[in-house]
Amino acid sequence: MESNEELNSSTFQSYVYMVKAGKPIGPRDLMRGANLSSPSVAYRNLQKLIDLGLVVKDEYGNYVVKEKVGINGYVWVGKTLMPSFAIFGFIFVGVLIAEIAILIPHLLLGSPIEEAFWLLTIVTVVSAAIFLFEALRSKKKPRF
Image (cartoon, rainbow, N blue to C red; front, side, top):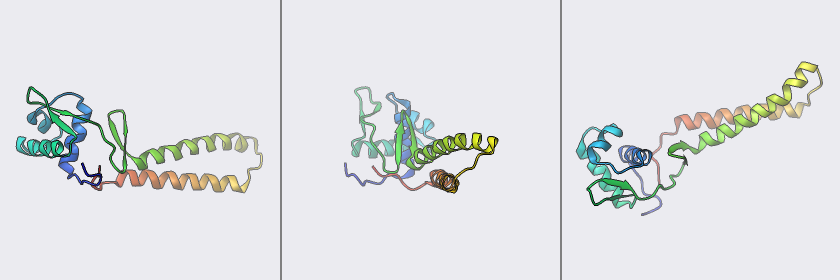
């Protein structure tokens, strides 16, 4: 399998559905589960996944995911595929929550807050917003 092989959206949906299903499936199951237009589209996607070495056909004629591979720009979290940008966005949201937890007592007690801390909080908010926005709009074709 070439590391930069491109999948079309339909084949990508099929692969993700099969990983989430975690069991052998047939073309009609794939058609319904991945919201494909016909069994022939499901079969064509299965053939492409076999050619890529990601799926094998079992002795009963069903298809099974051979291996769960990394996809550029995405991270597997269990059986859920998330854009990498979302992970970074959530990290920055966590840092922002910690910063707010530090700010609240200072604001309630009226103690001075260093300007550098305000700058850090603004940078954290902007970073979290950018990463989460990019995660939402990331619709490019995945690459293995």
